[in-house]
Length: 339
Length: 131
Image 1: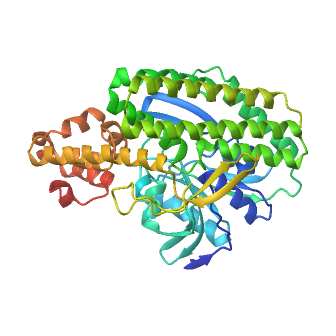
Image 2: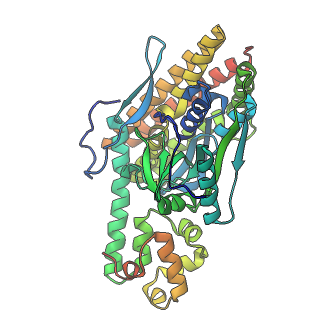
Image 3: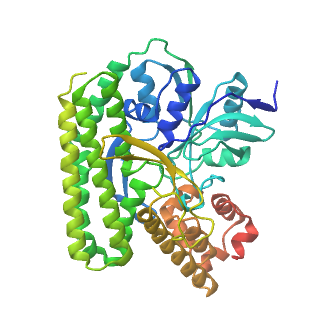
């Protein structure tokens, strides 16, 4: 039986980051109060990787977050919640039918989508970025109600458009990926989840033996940054520099490439478990995040008037090295922590 | 974080939406606020769009002058490289690059053209006559 109008009582809250926002909203729907930083921290959202050999919109690619769906998947795993993730569908029609079935059962369903053809998305951010997330929670005739946590209010999208963004092509194509929570775990062990999550984040940021990831990746980027004006000319160098800012500040990061959100997570857990070490780590992270902000301001000034490139880029590069060292200190502290 | 949107953007439609942003104060508190981006972010975003728009305009001139096929124009308009377009349309890269020549484009079959119109989300008429 096909119902035309379905509306699940799902509370939309705006968030800094699309996926951890969706995850925290889903937790709230099932009656567990969870803030966005908490979901982000437990889901290992924090990351850094610099991939100069891949180009995103004509500039080297870098990422301040983990791969798509890691936040949802890991937070479910660490907290022992029964959730389903369908990685890909064979047929677009089947993926939409599966979504309808879920909505009829009253399950708000998360989906990975591409941003470029998303009709309600702010036009200045329409780029080929396939790692966006939103949650569908209602249907009205041929339109779906979706909660995109980057936006202030829930949005309406037609089924044709929704299908198009769910089947966006290119790098990291979503292929109709969707996920939802089946049953909520009643007695969650948040303490052990936080411990596991922090361990994993420290591993990914400081210990992975690959030079383009984590702290080492930031150092590599800083070294490359110095060479850009000579290698590519001033115009291109400034455009590449802009890419760092765009990736760290725009595209829904909550500012400073998620460092603020992670700091907030450390603070929240520190207060929850009365742990002074976590609080100390959170203030270090906050300082590192403020340095990222400062780096952004200086780079933007550089992009604006492009005065003495060699000197400026040298300075910016030094600053980035400094930030990397600051972050390293945080991870060293977190590595020894006992919760 | 700013309260008001700023006229840095050249396009009127830009800068209309408010985002949730975090900050860390000297008192050791993390705060969230809903507002517009700072000037720093807007400058770089506008810089990116300037570059994209230049590329689109250059492509339009080239197509009008008969030096390139309309595929080049739509490729730049949707902000993709031949590599991306190859993935979007399901046509091999070397063929996509070849189709950028007007001479080759004019000989393309309906089937191939349809792949392109689907990738760009436009009609066949729009593909043949650029605005």
